[in-house]
Image (tube, rainbow, N blue to C red):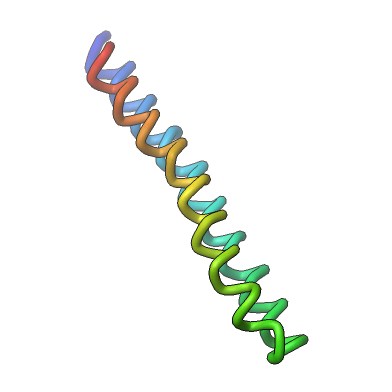
Length: 67
C-alpha cells in the first residue's frame, strides 16, 4: 500500500508542475511574440514564474520521502 501511495504522490504531484511550467513558458512566449520590445521585461518574469511553479514539484518530492 505504501508503494501505491508513493506512486500516486509522484505521478500526480509532478504532473501539475509540468503543466504549470509549460503554461508559463507558452504564455510568456506568446506575450513576446505579440510585443517583441517587451522581451527584456517578460523573460525574467517567465523564469520567476517557472521557478515558483517548480517549488510545488520539490514539495511533492519532499512528501514522497515523508510517506
